[in-house]
Structure formats: C-alpha cells, structure tokens
Amino acid sequence: MSASSCPGWLLDEVASAGRENLDAEHVARYDGKEDAGAVAEVALLQHLGLVAESVVVEIGTGTGQFALAVAPVCARVVTVDVSPVMLELLRAKTTTTAAGNVEVVQAGFLTHEHHGEPADVVYTRYALHHLPDAWKAIALVRMRRMLRTGGLLRLWDVVYDFAADQAAERLEAWCATGGEVVEGEWSRAEYEEHVRDEHSTFTWLLEPMITRADFTIETAEHSEDGIFAKYVLRAV
Image (cartoon, rainbow, N blue to C red; front, side, top):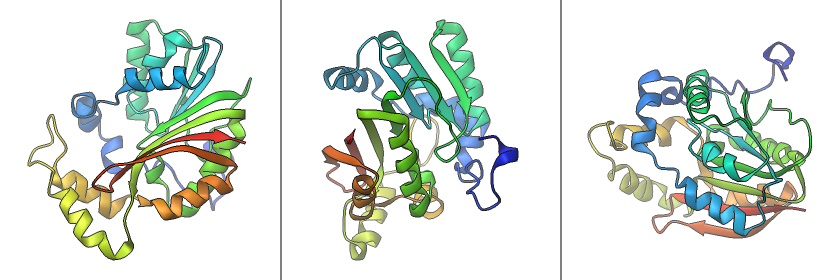
C-alpha cells in the first residue's frame, strides 16, 4: 500500500516509529547497544521447522541483525521497516554481505503487502509496541494473513506482565536500571521515553488479541521483572 493510497484514518506509522528510530545518530550506535541474539533465534526457528525452502518476513527489521543471520539458511527474507534511516543502514549491510535473497521494503505492520508464496515465518522484535492497542490487533490479523496455515509468528516485545495497580512501582524499577549515557547502553531517559511516548501493553490485553487473530500460543516467556515477553505463535 503506497502512502498516496492510504486512507486518511490510517495510523501514520512513521510518526509512531519512535523519535530515536528516525535519528541517524541513534541508528548508527544501535548495534552497539542492542544484541538481538540472532544466532540463537535462528537456531530456535530451525528447531521449530525453518528449512532451506522457507520464506521469512521480518517486520520492524531495524538494522537487520536477525534478517542477515537467517538469510543463509532460508530461501527468501523480506525485511520491512518504516524508518528510512534504519533501511539505509540495512541496505549498506546487504551490499557488503552479498545477501542476495534479502528484500528491503519500506512499510509497516499496517501497510506491508506480502507477495509470492505465503510466509513460513513472520518475525518481529521490539516493534509492535509502536502501535496503540487497537492497531496491534489489526497488525496481528495482517501478520496471520501473510502466513501459511501452520506457519510461525515469533514475537518479542516490551509487554507488561503485572496488574495495572503495580505499574508505578514496576515501571519506576525498570527505568532505574538505565544508565546515564546512551553510548553502549540504554539510558534511564530512553526507558522513560519508551514508557511515556510508546505503546507497550499488558500481557492480559495482548494475549487475547493474539488468539483472536487465529494464532495459538505455543510458548510465552515473561521476564522476572514483568517487562519483556517472548512468544512462539502458530497460525491456525
């Protein structure tokens, strides 16, 4: 879906991408701040059925850590992100790594149109929280439509696994773990910006959206502090 064809009521995903993800300085230091654990993620997906013939779609690909790790073991990787700054860096990486099966698309959860064989895996990490909850539900339905029946959605995100009346205590405790600088680590100011300006939700809101979108929850891992969640979801 091109920008010119989007209806006026559709969420502007670029405006919702988060200030830092459109900032060249932040993007340049991102790989030094965040390790996506891509090798372990690829191994997990291979254990769950990823094979050389598989089609993978990653939404919110960012700098492409996962995409470039999965490319050598599958047939096609479609990388999707709304940030032109992130995609500029990813395109440079694909040139230097000669990753010929990686397609780079500027789009988002609400606008990407998948073409070709249905995806075997859709992957998204720390991206869905950029959408308010109603749009998360729509995004989950759209990801289900990209997948073949039995395909996998691997979803990581900041998802709060505690009651609403615990939010002040839990969120303050998380923000307090941030450092003072942004080089090489996540700062308190960045955590505060995430909580204040982005749209992380509660597990008890997100998980019904997941099942309503025709996924089964095969695994759900919640961090001890109740801030992060990792899901393996199966398309039914």
